[in-house]
Image 1 (cartoon, helix red, strand yellow):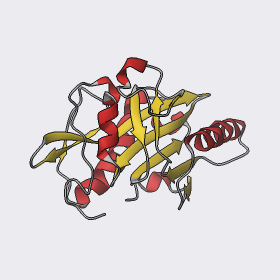
Image 2: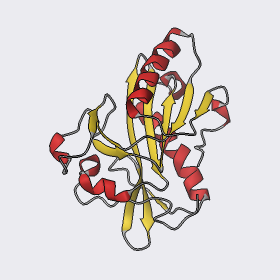
Image 3: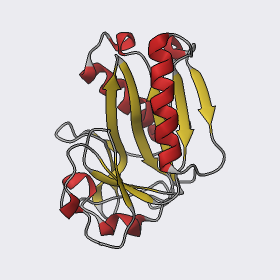
Image 4: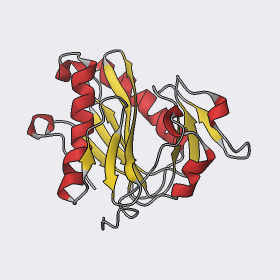
Length: 198
């Protein structure tokens, strides 16, 4: 699945990694790229990766939302709470100048969500509007509203980083070891769980 940002973003560089990337390596890369973008030495970038299995805690996360003491986790600078990353989940890291979005965080979040919602709808996913929480939900025929995409961002020096993750075919059992995004009882789905081919 490739996110769609529209032709007005055609000047942004794209990079797609074919092998899983350790989370720490991606974080270090983003930190350096954001600094380079702010200094004008490198272009804005959309980076698509998968990670090796890891649980990440955003700036609002509570460690008690990790239900299994044996899982590996890392604290990170993105917004949001606790989530899981692993093979089968596409992470779209967006490093862009907020001036593209009139320095409007809500506008940026709308563009970020729609960049993933549009191709998911085209693949046959019934996306549900849920403005009370950040992310994207699909109408699962058996489970009902189920989260399929997760958003956690950070703005530094007027540049966005971190981004949005989409469940293609991750180990959904991994989400049972946490309280995803701090919401108890949250149902999680993926394209494969919805019986939609990638």
